[in-house]
Amino acid sequence: MTKLRVGYLVDEGDQESLVFDLIEQSRSADHYSIDYLIVQTFAEDKCLFRRAYHFVKKHGLLKLVALIWFKAIIAVETRLFVRDRKLKSAFERHPLDALDVPRADVRPVKSKSGLVYRYRDDDLDTIKRLNVDLLLNGQGGILRGEILNVCEFGIVSFHHGNNDVNRGGPAGFWEVFNQEPSTGFVIQRLLDELDGGDVFMRGAIATKATYAQNLAQIYKKPTVFMHRFLEALGRTRTLPDVLPKSPYAYRLYTVPSLGEIAAYQVKTFSILTRKVFSLLGRKNYRWGVSYQYTEDWRSAVLWKSNIIKNPPYRFLADPFVLRHADMDVCFVEDFDFRTDRGKISVFKIDGERYEEMGPAIDEPFHMSYPFIFTVDNELYMCPETLAIREIRLYKCVEFPLRWTFYKTLIKGVSAVDTDIFYFKDRWWLLTTIDSSEIGEVCSELHLFHSDAFDADNWTPHPNNPVIFDSERARNGGLVREGDRLFRVFQRQGFDVYGESMGIAEIEALGAETYREQVMSVMGPRFLPKIIGTHTYAYDNGLLAVDFVKIERFKPAG
Image 1 (cartoon, rainbow, N blue to C red):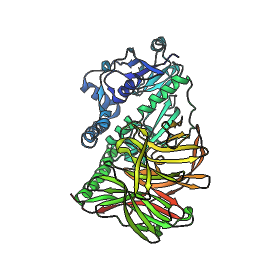
Image 2: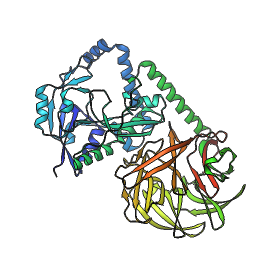
Image 3: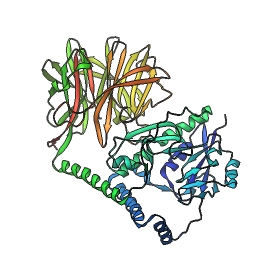
């Protein structure tokens, strides 16, 4: 089958990294190719001072000062706060010639505002002669007119924001300014309504503390999904279903005013100051675990729980409770501040008394989230092993402390908090994956299935990620009630990991279906001074949850 032919619509000059990234990914594509850069050129004054004069004449001096100040903030924040090399590359610029793609030049007509671009017939004919099936939008104007329909599949674009609540720009800023828990993006086909096109895919990732950090991740995260969208379109030659639309009831966002920029800097300074004082005061996030006995996990009263005291220099998190061999036990992530690494440890629970039994699995890499299941009366554990980019199984040799490595199920994947369970004649694996490999592991819930719990190959769900939302995707436990399944999910907050959790019933689970209904959300209000909670475990009357506080203590070393 002939590949989908794609043209990339860009402005003259150096290109953002997201254009470069997608072109690089396209070189290994099976079903599409980026055949042309369609470069918009304009007759603009080369003199910077004259351009500034005309800008001031049209928009006013304060607008120019605000724009310069805003760009300076990005530059300073990028240097100070964006440390990861892959994220920092989001701000790199690439010359057009370096993209190594044939170009065709067009000269659209700008509106008086300079924001809206329309195409003359000769430029439309130029694009038609290229015989491309689809245009990707990588330019900075608002497109109107026949250009929207010049190709069979129209113009497809990112919008770096949730267009149900955020239209306009700048990308990634207003979510930080408003301290929203998540920042969205969509893949959409452009229509005449600004940022109100036909949406094919929607995602949301946790909002970072500073604009530059947030912008970097929202630029790097979605590219792989545009690549997959184009691969699927090239394979099927059919656009996916359009997601439902909602009335837009918010302002049209623009570059912030001087007052808004000043307010942003005050907010950011306050956040960073608190973090600095926490470091100077030797304060740290420290998780803990509490438990209780209750006949019904639904009716638990969490403030009545018994707290397992954290051992010195360590914290406990991610509880998994189990009754086995006439014993109630709680498996936990046991993190040691001295080694900066977690292992899986066991606590025996007996009423209001508990006893640390010792480590169950201690590897030379970090481990957490000990999910346990039974096959033919044998116990298996799937702990989180993100540090080695594997999803692993361990088998119990002697309960509860002796476990041996059994098998690697999936290699070369950045996955966290995996649940494995048998349901309706299939084995299912639910996990959170970082498809973009930027260290963001809270937003993509992926589903796989197989005919065996230790299969060599797991079949991915065709709609992966089945949930793309940092407020719902990451697992926090699994509760079974007869033939009903209840998935515990984490909710990430603004610059807060594990701010709260919720419970959703899985209503449809199949090779091509997944649907869940949120039942409840639980915030960090059941114990004094806690600021987060993200795991909920239940088995045979024993319930455990975790929580986090900011505590002053001095780790050894």
